[in-house]
Structures are given as C-alpha cells and as structure tokens.
Length: 290
Image 1 (cartoon, rainbow, N blue to C red):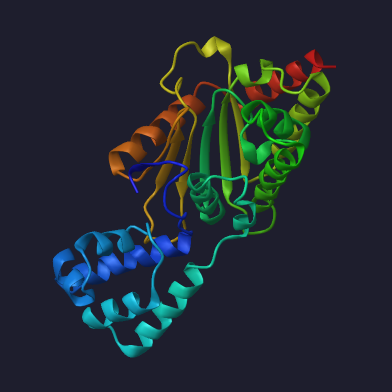
Image 2 (tube, helix red, strand yellow):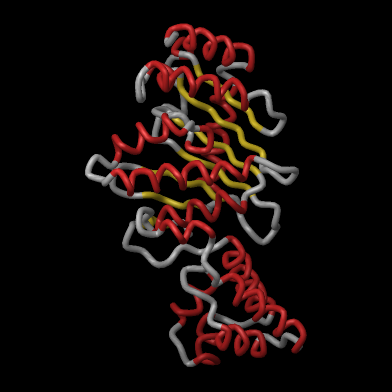
C-alpha cells in the first residue's frame, strides 16, 4: 500500500488477499530469492511479483502454485494456499454496491470489515459507522448532489449495512474522536440532529465503542487536519494501516512512521476531553435541537 488510490485504480483487495500476499513475500525472502528470481520462475516481470505480494492484483492459482513450489513448499501447503487464494479472490459483500461505490472505497470497506481495532478522527461529520439513516442521507445528498434518489438510497443502505460489524461477540473496538463542530453543523435539520445525538449517546454506552468530543475550548491541537481512520488487525501478517482522504484523492498508509504519527495524534486528541465532557456536550446540544 503506502500509495494514493483513485477511483480508477485496480480492484480492491480483501483482507485475506492482503494476508496471502504478505505470506508470499515472507516465503520468497525465507527462500533467499529476489523479485527477479521469482519473476523468472513465472516468466513475468518483477513488477508482477511485487503486485502479487502487495495484493494489488488477484492471486492467480497457477501463479501461486508455481511460486510456492519454487519456494520449496510441500504439496499440502501448496494445496491449502491455493484454496485460500481462490477464496480471497471472491468479491466481498460490498461488491453488490459497485455501481455506486468507487473501487478505492471498496478497499476501505474491506479493511473496516477485517479490522479488530478502529480509531477514527472526524472534524466535519459523525463517522459513517455511527450515522443514522436520516443523517447519512443528508450527508450523502450533499456529497453527491447529482445522484438519482435510487442511487442515493443505495449509498445510504451500504453505509448502514457497514454498521453491522459493530454487532455480535466478535465486534471490533471502535474509538471515535470528533470535533465539537460536528455537533453544531446542522445536517438534515433539527430532528435529524436530535436523532443522531441520541444514537451517539446510545452507542457510547457500549463496552467496545468510545465516543470522544473535543470541545472548542481545547483550542489549536495536533489533529486539526483531515479526517483519518486507523486500522489494526488480529492477523500478525498484516501491518497497521491508516486511511486518509482529501477532496481529490485517498491514501492508504502502512509505513511505520506514518502510522505512528496518526496514532499519536489520536492519543493526544483523546486527552483533550473525557467521557464526562463528551456526554455533557452531547446532552447540551440535544437540548439545542429540541
């Protein structure tokens, strides 16, 4: 990763594909082989091997089988790996929304679905995983003013379906830091805002969800920048990843220095508030919209 992905990029990798790509890299290095060596075994360019290892392309079973044999893997391991590669190439549930979702955001949903821990910073809007139907519709209507009502509703439906990952015994930990400005931005009208704040108060009671609101009184701070999401995975093969976006591009970062910088920013912002302060702000703003 560590690159900008646009809506014209390659198909989004699933988390399993990323894990298998990382394993291919480890097996090649354990075998003492270079990218050139592996490329010669497949009669492809070194770039093709690199893209396989980075999960930027689908894992072709014939390629995978030949590479593992070249790296000295036993037949049982080869068969198991090929089976996982075929599974990894299957599109995720969000593929059904490909008509309204760009490929770069499909990568985000894959990371979100596979993460064990998510930390997000939102200076403008309530994070998508906690939005109500009315709030999501108003946000997306503003972002996609030319959408037909049908396409807009599909975008909203996808956003709400993503929230299913917060349910169940294996739900990930979600830690949200938002600016107080989010509560003052009237999205969809007073009733929509009141329902949205009720939702935030409700989920903040869950043991695996934290909602921190940085008050205006905190002044200037390190996180006053673009929104970002930090992903940590249970699988040791996967590095921590940070997603950030600007108006015309999105970035998936896994370089240690980039990840640590965002993680430290999130930690510092969380120290600017408390659970009591956040709930007080939510309750005060709810009254404002009554």
